[in-house]
Image 1 (cartoon, one colour):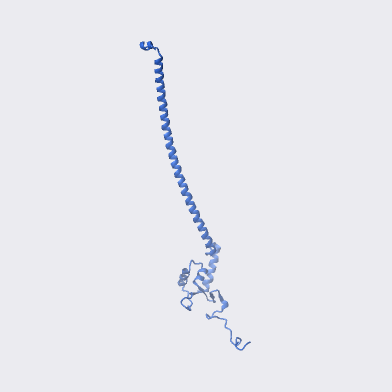
Image 2 (spheres, rainbow, N blue to C red):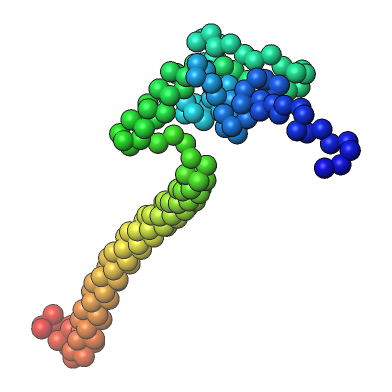
Length: 193
């Protein structure tokens, strides 16, 4: 032991400035028998709330006291009664047994990935629906054009049949004229067949 060391003469204090034994301190949460001192974020996590604003409103509604701040920039610490703190974990366990877990960052990340996959699928589905609609429009146009072509073909066929009938009549007239021309002139003169 050297001359300036008086560690054995000064009693060791096992408490920090808040008067709470450091062994009772759990992370940033200070625990006593009556209450637990926690930040809004810790309250949010413990009570499975959506945000720190909800934790602040819960503390305000339940009239939980806040610890005095050392400086204006420090985090607000709230004294949550031990019964409420323990009841929150029991409620969460009961909720989990019913199948509704509080949000987990990994689950949120996975859900975001699934949401983006669903969005991509919906976009692909919309593109496919647009393509199907375009193809149906093309099919309707092709069917209309085919109908028009059938009508034109029917008209052309009718014209062909009319032309064939006119040709047949012209042949008959030509055959009669030819037969008349071959008949001897004297039979034509007297009108004999």
